[in-house]
Amino acid sequence: MRVRSPTIDFSDVRPDWAPNREFAQYYNAASTVPAHVEPFLVKVMMRARDELAKRPGQQRLLEDVEIFIKQEVQHCKRHVAFNQRLYDSGYAGMRELEAPYEADYRRWLEDKPLRFLLAYSEGFEAMGSSSAEVFFTELDDYLNGADESAVTLWKWHLAEEFEHRSVCFDVYKALYGDGLRGYLYRLYGFVCAITHIGRHVKRVNAYLLAEDRCHLSEAQHATSVERERQVKRRIAKASLPRLLKVFSPRYDPATKQAPAGMAPYLEL
Image 1 (tube, rainbow, N blue to C red):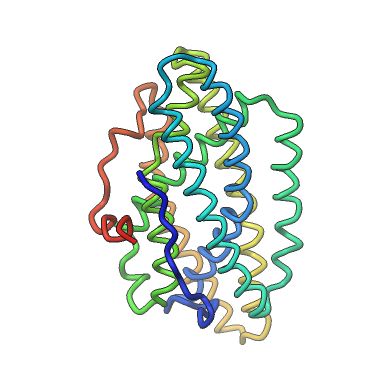
Image 2 (cartoon, one colour):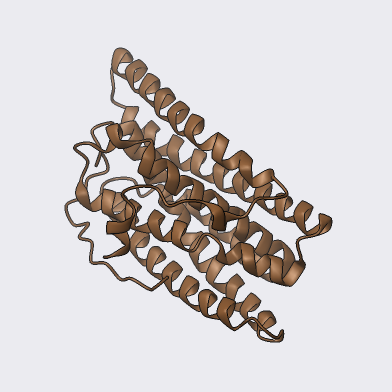
């Protein structure tokens, strides 16, 4: 693991950065997540780092936490810049949808115990490593002809998500154990994360597509709806088997094998 700070120019990126606009808008909606969850993760891991420091034999994990934090800061910066292009391209209404999502994280940092914050964070990271596997192995036809800046953003980000896939898991295990209670609470955090984040992405995606469709003919609208259905079905079909593995008591993200094509994005 190491910290990377790639230069990615978003100045010419269009909202329809992939030939399939519905595919692009799905990931445009998803891009709002790192802008808010990454700062949340940083704060959670800083608290966890303080707890880990009180325990002997955690130096290696503490070093991983430091790199994890710095990687997440870089992810947030790049997605904030990318999202600004979306706002400037006529989707300023995204901000209104992002506000309550961001507020959830602020409130949780004030009200929720570290156990929950870490379990949720690990849930997000489990989603992230699964998303990396899907993006690198299942979606090449959607990425053919896509804007290289947008593709680089997602492949670099998801490659790092896969690279640090074990950090939250290991921190949660170190602080709260891996017995039955630790296992069940980890699953609770995962379900909370996938539900909370999924609901937010669905709202933003619906807004983006509604904006795109407001001037379409009836036939064009129907075609767009069908493309959306196909995109979501493809992503769900590829994601579900990977996400179900998280429910296993033997789940360990460290055992996952890196998908082909990921290495060049870890050399940026």
